[in-house]
Image (cartoon, rainbow, N blue to C red; front, side, top):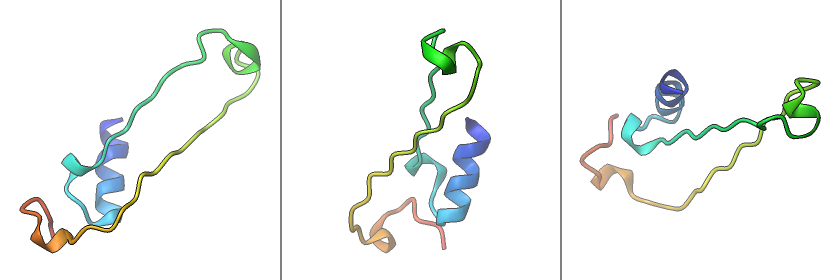
Length: 59
């Protein structure tokens, strides 16, 4: 997760403390939990913000 966080921050030109990654398992629920397949879900919360006024912004 740490590597994904730093890579996403780098791609988005953000400080890593502005990126959050959460993960969970299916705990043997359904075909994913039985290891018959994989699934990925991504959620991004976006809003306008003037990042140049943020002290954590890196050019």
